[in-house]
Each structure stands twice: as structure tokens, then as C-alpha cells.
Image (cartoon, rainbow, N blue to C red; front, side):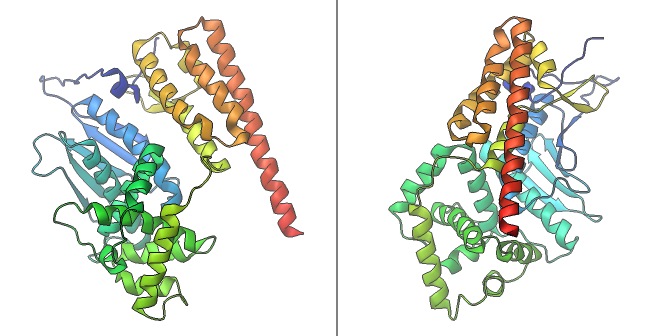
Length: 376
């Protein structure tokens, strides 16, 4: 029986349908970005899948700075509703359930903020359980939203650098003490992204930043927590401010090579080659191999999703680590083969599988060699 596809491609194809119940009333659909990450429900299936696409991307971008687990015991539940009194609201319920109520008319930036806030609160619950002290500092929320935006689009990072080069950094106390409510503060938003960058850089391979993140989510005083987690660096508030100002300028003016790390290349390329579909209207989502996806490339929804991913791959292809460059090129060729004959599509998928396997072997061999050198 021919499978009915239900995938991320609903957004790209604009295939909005509403499932009706026995009485003709709309029945919500539920979509997972991945097990234990985000679960989205909405009456409009196109809206649910659109948020799922965004949620999957956000998890991938924020996993390194937040040290996210592969999954939580329970996902972040997102409910898309019509005519909500505010763009979004995030709550932690007894039992550790974190839910996000999202207005159907929320703008993309508001959706991103809602997902970030829900993710940070779920991380706080995972570390500390549900209690009245849990907090999602505004600067950290803004920092994660900005980190996501600038890592998803390199032009946004360039724009942030250019804008910051002509500004003076705000006081560290102003960034750390930024309270929820009130209007937007572009200066504090930009400074929040740089503070997140600085704290990770200063932590290095140590545990200073993860320790600080845990204390911030627990609701500790941010300045006290900063001094405790980065000991020996701040004899006085003046020295702490000097440290911040110096690190801010260094981060803004840094010109890293336009290349992804080995791990980031693997994660980004793997996500682009991973397709999740439902085998039928009543069946759970499953991972569909690339050859099966390409075999269905003539179907409008699948063709639209392949085209979308081809565009996303083209933006990161030049930045892939050399270990994964061939795999990236062959995946681009596989996406381009969506309009070719079935035989060419199958051959392109096989080429990518071979190049992907070679890249994984290279990464493993490199890691083993470095580990051996460190032991010596």
C-alpha cells in the first residue's frame, strides 16, 4: 500500500489540510521534532510541521552551548492556539512537564523566542526539578535566540559584528540584571550574544560555563554565581567590568576561519540527510532512508522538501570540514537528482552513502590518533 507522507515538507509545500472528526470538528495533529525534544500540537497541520522544522533546527544549534542531552524524559509540549492573549506563554507544571502556549499568528522571531524559553525552562527542570526559584534570565534567553539566529545564517553574524564594532559594550551588571518585561533593547540583545560567547571561550574545556548555567537556571544571583564559577578572576566589580570590556572587544573583532568543526559538519550534514515521515495517517513517525526519499522525488511534497534542503545545503557547503566535504558534495548531487531518472537517483544516494561512511571513518581515525598522542 502506498505510504502517505507526513513530514517537515508540509511547510515548504504549503499543503495545509485540517483533519476533521466524526462531528466535522477539527482534530488537532501532533508532531514530534524528535523523541524527548519537542512535541507540537495544532489544528492546522501545516503550522504544526512548520514549528517542528524550526524546533529541530533550534535544538541542533543550541545543543553545544547548552550541553543538551539527546532527549528529555518528557518533551517540551508546544500548543498552537488561535486568538491567544499574548504571542506565547511558557509554564512548568507539577511532574516536570514544560508547556509552551503559542499564538497561531506569532511572528517567526516570537516563535523562536518561545521555543528557546521552553527549552531553557525544561533544562532547568531537568537539573533542579520544579520549584519556585527556577528562572530563565532574559539575557540568557536573548543570547540563545541570537546564537541560534546567527549560527543559522552567517550573514546575521556578520551583521552583528559590524553593528557591535561601532558601539560601546553596556555594563556587565546591566546585561546580567536585564529583567523580563519592557520593550526591546538592541544593545543588550547584542551584548547577550557576546556574553554567551565570552563565557564559553573563557571556560575552555573546564566546567565553569556549565556550572554557571546550572546556577543561573536555579535562580541564583547572576553576579554572585559568576564570581563563584569563574574564581580568581574578579577581585572587585571594577576588575570584573574590565574583564568584560576586554573580552567583548576581543569577541567582536575575532575573525575565525569560515569553516565548521568536524563535529558540527557531521551534525549539520546528518540533519540534512535525515528525513522523518509517517508511514500512514495513524502511524508513528519513522526515519526514511535517503534512497526511499529520492524514489518518491516526483511527489510534490517530497520534491519541495528536497528543493528546500538543497538551498540550505548550498549555504553551508563551502564551510564543511574537509573530512565531510565529499559527502556534502555528493548529498548536493543527490538533491539535484530529484528530477532525474530513477536509476540516477539511486546511484546518487549510493554515492552519498559511501562518502558519508568514509567521512565517519576519517573522523574516528583522527580522534583515535589524537587520543593516542595525548596518552603518550
